[in-house]
Length: 561
Image (cartoon, rainbow, N blue to C red; front, side, top):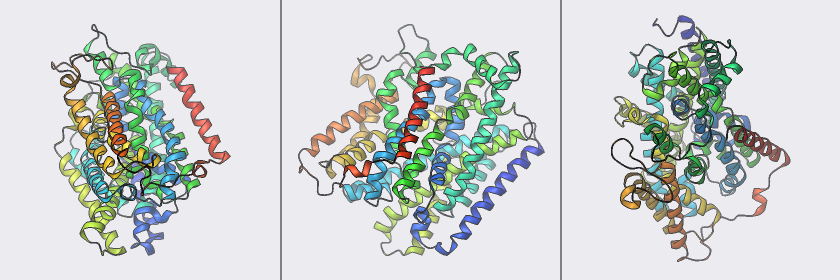
């Protein structure tokens, strides 16, 4: 055994592995008679319960990106990064009330299918290819890399590739059983990651309290954090001035104060939760009320996430600044792993299990969505049109294996340079290259009957091109200072616009272009969806869930504004 993990830690982890695998196999065995039913494999036969939908949404969302990346941003930025989680709860309310009814009424099962039904096959094919590349080369690779690095640090630092392969194989075991196995094992995964995450946060706070002489008390430890790092408990990052330090400039570039709320963060959340196969697939096979309740349940769970994934990063910052934490391995992304070293034997194994649960659930959910898009929207339509149910399931499984193999190969030596950027920022920035165009296309497609297929194609391409231009050529386009931002040297003699603002600009101009092009078409596109007010009515119990969630978010912002 190595210096970081003891026998009891390995025992806890092995028990977790056996329980998840055994439960996944039992779910698979019960639906084995439907093994060759494509809808059963890709959509869980359309009978997921609300709690399975909600838990699966969170388990698939909370991955190494959050545990490692968001904890790293907590170390760097502080509580401001919690906006991603708390505003995600608002985005989930919007999706549950307004987006899901449109999908379900029109029997939409994949996002490319939405684009074909609403626009045309060209738009659907372009986006299917876009999503496959994004899911494999941004999402899968970053989840695998961050997770392997974190667990490797705890296991002694010599097993990176073994851990990487182990995570991939574990995810394959779950995902090859189809969506129902993924979703129901996610219930266990989310329980493990929440319990393990809360334990880690509790130990981190009591450790802070112990080092600062206020006793092993979590509440006292939290008060120490607020006293020792008051700048880490502000939701709004101030705009830099000409005398600002490089650190202050870097923080603003990562999360540009109020402009984040005006621009990028809404596009990130609404696109992620409402226009993303990886996420919406959980709800697309259910009836409307079940889907809504599950999504709102996920929204309430999101309110807990900063406590689990961001607070340990702030604790690591305070301990590090006061000499109680050694040099972080991997920069800010090493904050969470550093905090885990304080956990006692056994609990350390539980936290590693929680981290593994988050990684594996996300990998399994992602490859399941990859196989769904590839099989239903590319292979069945363009390669093997006569493929039957059994063939579709087999093709889906081959796609699962191929996607995971590609992710391992590109992660093996960090070919994509994820470690150099910081995991959380890497994902947000590079998914942000297509988010503005995709969200504009979906939003107008759902709620404006005049939107045309030509406008959609122009929108998705223009959104990508503008995102690249704004991110890479800001000074050429705007000069060094504009009314929208103040850009200061980033340490390399260059100037930047914060990527949130880049996304906002890209979305604004993409919307203008799509609206302008659509005005050249008919007043009502023949492919426009039928929408009526009855679709958006919510039941009293749904209203109660929405009000509770919003009141909690308002209280949090009042406290930390």
